[in-house]
Length: 236
Image (cartoon, rainbow, N blue to C red):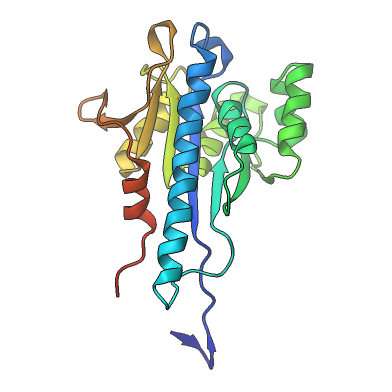
């Protein structure tokens, strides 16, 4: 396809991994190293698949993607707890030949959102924002509307993610925009959810979320196959 005489630009090969999950008080008792290991495994598998797809695409002769390195985009609102666990693992990931980018949809302007956090939490928040792409929604706390703002940020994350990591105890949301609500919405949309279950005082191995009348652990996550279906161009 062309626009006039100039060919249309090719898209960058990009995988988008969103995160939803509990704040620290609902992660009490979960093994922190297990959480980090499971999250790291998902992100590393996504980066490895991007690298493999880039090589396959280059071998086609007529590449479907731009010449830029593939991009792993991690979408996190940076709430304390699960959001930051994933953001930190993304920042620590240094995959060869793959760029990693952190995108942060915030429920309020950053100065207002920072009121949610302790002094140490605010310092980490600012450090994670540095070098990230930040999208500040126009949420407000006035008139009891804070939950609406958190819900909007959760939906913005979901709208811009191909795969969702949910660090979740399997229980219903305790407020509007909570983890249980966002996971249920992801399931209704058919979005693949990698569930790291933190119920029972510990973190369990990740599984793919299955949903009929409610949540259940399905197969172990095969990130490679998921991204094949989402990103691989047709043979023609």
